Image (cartoon, rainbow, N blue to C red; front, side, top):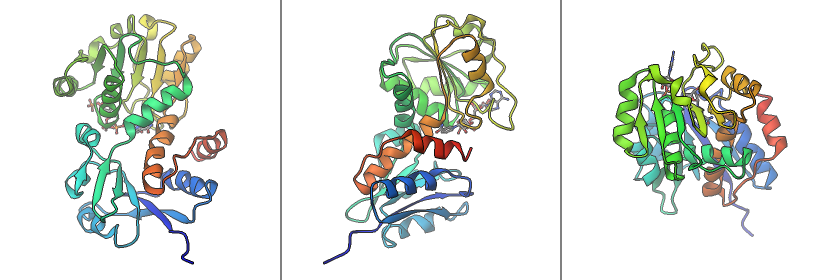
Length: 279
Ligand code: NDP
């Protein structure tokens, strides 16, 4: 009798020691009774083209891709799914049955799922949405909100030209506004999202006056260290519902695990607590 297949995957990055992904995927392998391992794969800048072709031969079902390789990986796989192509970055590779490599980006899925976990009746078309930031996280957030039917997304970024560039690339419903207008851009919104690095541990807090923000508006921050950023604390203090960034991180991992090992894993309070303990 042949033994069950070994479930092998990992995270490719530089550095990777800080990543929470091994804890997450190894928890699920254990929980679902799968024999296998999710390992750290430290791949130096410039070495990605040497590392990826070895995945299939080494028996990997796939891997996650993190900094600094998320963009470079697009050119190094056999196929890129449409979503990753639009996001301009990849965070997951799945080894196909013929050994070829296909790239995906699950950050948008993770983001939307984190909102639905917090507010099951959340809708993207409930009203205007203001998004601050125009970096990698913003691309995933804005595209996924637009895909979910957002009618108006006001995009503001410290470097105005980057917000204008994204609005031109994505088209309606995204419109760029000047960074200087960010306080006024909170009027009549159903939701505010911070995708800038401001408020993250070691960074200054976001300079934002919440006075114009409706009290019912959902405030979401993709930062997860700390779990409650100064923005979320201020929003909670005035009565706004809030969503932190940990749910996005945890949920983006689920479709990858499913694609590699055939089980869609669930988020449990125990798992969330285990990851929170590492923050
Ligand atoms: P990028 O470097 O791609 O983008 C950084 C963004 O922050 C830019 O919009 C930048 O504006 C803005 N910014 C930087 N400094 C300032 C400042 N002093 N004032 C105002 N805006 C500023 O980073 P990412 O998009 O990859 O990551 C952003 C945050 O999102 C990080 O904290 C990261 O941890 C988090 N994140 C969370 C994820 C999750 O799963 N929860 C997933 C991915 C990211 P400018 O263009 O002007 O430089």
